[in-house]
Image (cartoon, rainbow, N blue to C red):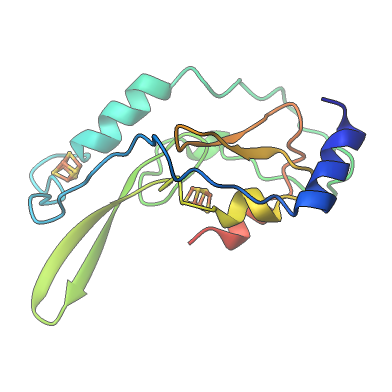
Length: 152
Ligand code: SF4
Ligand code: SF4
């Protein structure tokens, strides 16, 4: 698919996506999650980091501004950060206090139905697959992070 055809399909179809049939899902029972309070790092976070550790290419430095971006974010010096999503950390545990109860919510991409990230990407770099996963095409992504801005 060429870049122009991606633009056209994005404009014409408005990035409409429907993954209502045959989807995979991960169910998280937050009644059972204790945030791995006794661990130095939550085990799901640790496992995800270990499994995906080689998937982000090592940045070549100095990083130069690349068109059309005038700025860039370099997370490679913050690889140990586990309290938010980063290119090196794909699950974090959010602690929420409701009345007197503390609950822990594993946060990561929810692969939303009709995901706003897919609908909002101006370059059509995101796709919703019929299996339910929302996927970024790293050959088309310019790093403008509109997907991050609209992600719930
Ligand atoms: S979901 Fe993650 S943080 Fe929660 S108990 Fe399981 S491994 Fe620990
Ligand atoms: S909007 Fe956020 S949570 Fe939903 S599919 Fe996109 S990246 Fe995942």
